Length: 242
Image 1 (cartoon, one colour):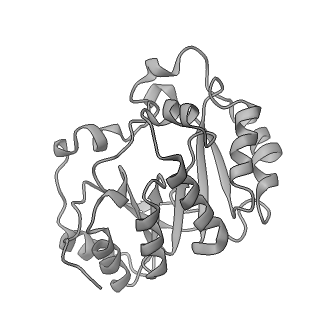
Image 2 (cartoon, one colour; image 1 turned 180 degrees about the vertical axis):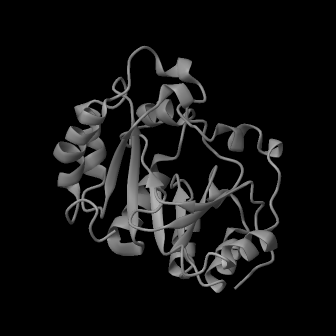
Image 3 (cartoon, one colour; image 1 turned 120 degrees about the vertical axis):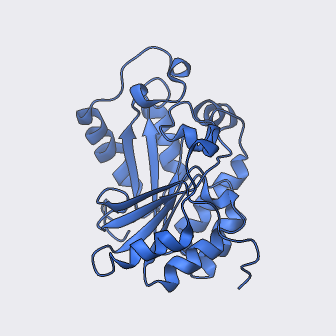
């Protein structure tokens, strides 16, 4: 294994989380930088001003994780966008060597990196954000810039074909994600293990003015859309086999 790139800087560390890995207790590491500018992003300072965060020493983080052995099930590597860092493989390898499972949060725009990490056994679980139908204008609106739709489709196909245990996640806003858009997204995710919808929160958004007028989906709306549009595209009942 090539570790020459060096592990990427760690800009945040949550010791215990019950919500970042479905069915697991996990620690979470946050890496800086992102290749998107999603208006609804709530971790936007990791993308826009990563130097405003202290860099945590990897050895100190690993030493702290060792104290949680037997309590946490794994470590989530999130961001920002982790796959931008050439040393991500070293970080994941060190976490695995310490005895923890790993989960990667990604936007899916680096399918080559995603496939390489999974095939090398460095990732046990992948959560990929799917922000809109796989159509250039719709995706650019949600992502804050133009994206490579083919790259997204490649990452989705790799995961659905069995490249890794996975979950797709979509943060939705009524003006952007009506039933027509959600059905189109569902067609692209047919056969996935899990697809989770969550309401966009304009109060925590990077650029709330880009969202326009309107209120977020209610929890009742999200539950209905999950039941009627998201769950039916899965290969198994929601939350199973993930």
